[in-house]
Image (cartoon, rainbow, N blue to C red; front, side, top):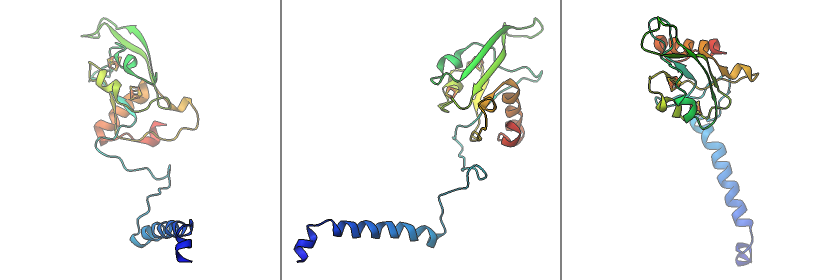
Length: 165
Ligand code: SF4
Ligand code: SF4
């Protein structure tokens, strides 16, 4: 009879139930809960996490970006849109600047290739996770948002999400 039982799925089913029950009970016993109430609660970030972008500005309030298209060319997700314009004569050390510079956070896969491609140390990824977006337009980070993110990072070390949206 026991040999017959061993050849059925019943022992495996019992083992499976035991494993499930042990996982069900263990987190409660140790008070570990891997589930978080996102988006009210944000997942932890780490030093090397890649999150929303920022663009560095110089002391005169001009972006370090010279609209060379290196980042948008490197981007595998086609998430960066740049419109290049001739720089005013008084802007030293550059011929062009970005009249438009948009990063679509919904297209971005946070690979960091734009950051690596930039010859001017202009575009960076912060280690702040992208927030939730209610419309597509909220997810487009233009120069204004990207420079605000830079100021946040400079002052506090991270992007302040509530003001980013
Ligand atoms: S992180 Fe990657 S996907 Fe996102 S904008 Fe930069 S290159 Fe494109
Ligand atoms: S962010 Fe850097 S790589 Fe991208 S257009 Fe500006 S200067 Fe070029």
